[in-house]
Image (cartoon, rainbow over all chains, first blue to last red; front, side):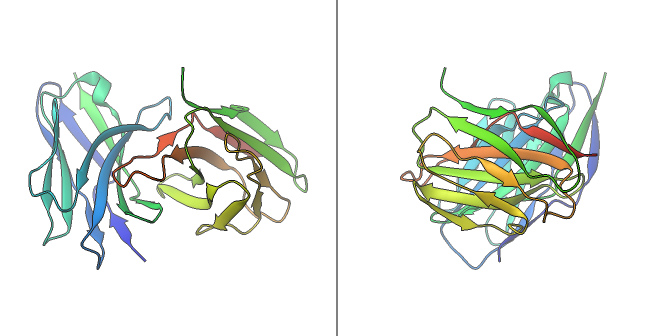
Length: 113
Length: 114
């Protein structure tokens, strides 16, 4: 079974600084999709960014970008110019094209003013 | 507005009672999912359904049951057989025909067993 590992249970960043959250996954597939979800204190899951495995170019959404290393099976999330509203749990997720989604255990991000 | 609704937001149950959590979506999505979230464990899949009148067990289906009689609805019943039901439950849906699609989530239900 595919597994997703987030090795950082907690991270903190100073407001306006940059932080990187790590994610690794285990798969023997070549065609799959990767996602980062944000869960703020309201507990509503919100999609932050997604990446198709066959695309070499790293995805970017405003202040959020990923570093996708397919050979290393690594999918880290970089948050630039961190804001207080970025404080949340962040979940990395993996999905094959015809399968359900697998989530990591999450990283709790604290943003210090 | 299109989205996913879950009710109730908070639910209390006495030991030995069954309880049903509601999940409704108006996104016209084919697939629906139920997850359980415990502290430090991320989301674990309970059941999922890709089409009406069909559903499959996820990783932790024991003590739970579901039905999918309508495309819009995917209720989850937590039975008395579930040994530790206190948790946060999330429902999600997805357009199955698209390869590159994410799951959309409801606001969740917090279940507490008294």
